[in-house]
Length: 175
Image (cartoon, rainbow, N blue to C red; front, side):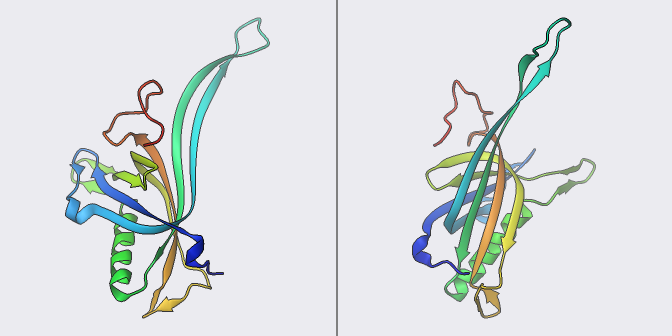
């Protein structure tokens, strides 16, 4: 069932493709700006712990193993005229290309990285781990294109916006 626009908050998402070994790509070609209607944002921090047992002890020694932070963002992109349709689908297609491998002759392949900003909540550097577009049966169509697109985007945070790995003593958790 379609949700009325009044239930949704409009925010901006910015994405810049940033390929390993090449740096940021052309801003005019790869800066993507969405006017999106956020339906949910999940921010997940996941530490892992390793247990080691010593001879003669029933309880384990516990050591910090690793850390990851992931964002899962659900949003709607809505087009109300032909120009918005074209802009939205061009940007959604470019965002989809950020999940595809980059082949370099003699070097194999790598994954594109992205610099991103979600409203005034978070800025970061990471990789897209999941991207899903959904057009359900209730989606109205205009000129043979869906009026709105439900997008589910998952990003694994690799560093802050200037490329520094997270550090609990020095990094800010939010903007």
